[in-house]
Image 1 (cartoon, rainbow, N blue to C red):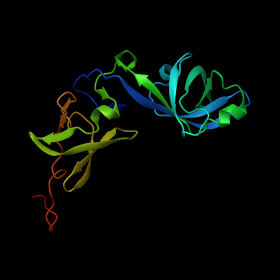
Image 2: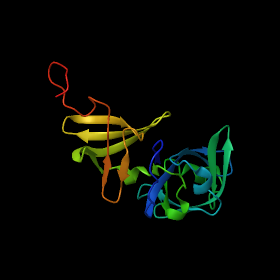
Image 3: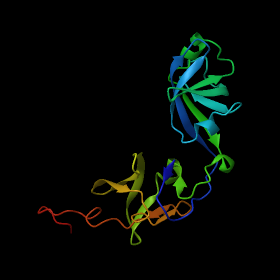
Image 4: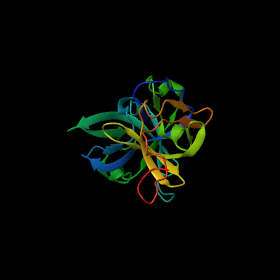
Length: 195
């Protein structure tokens, strides 16, 4: 999920499949699996009874199946999930590297202003003064703030996702309006000065 500091309320998310974790290693002898999380709300996504789709190779015995969460625990700040039907280490090891997905809807979305899922932002036009300067291709999540990766004719530009530089996000009309600092989106002449 991407957040912008201050400003406008976020639109309601649409119903989509969201990647929430990768199973990285078996834990213990009772079927536990360590998780690499891709969600800000593991307690919500991994609550008992939650159904998760799996991305596994087509020749895997787990292909086409879903997992039902039995329990989520933290060991030394590392999330470990237990699933129904995965009762021993051998079964858990057969799931290592699986990617877990959840179907998302507006009821499970965070009630936080100025927050969007990455898939809502990627592909939006990036406009400056009404003119398109590029397309948003990626969101980089850093500890201090998120950065928007904008593909322009001159190459990729990284823009801090803050209200001062991104005053408007309009997912319905497919664009974000930007007011970047000078020199960030201008072409640079051979002498090093902006056009």
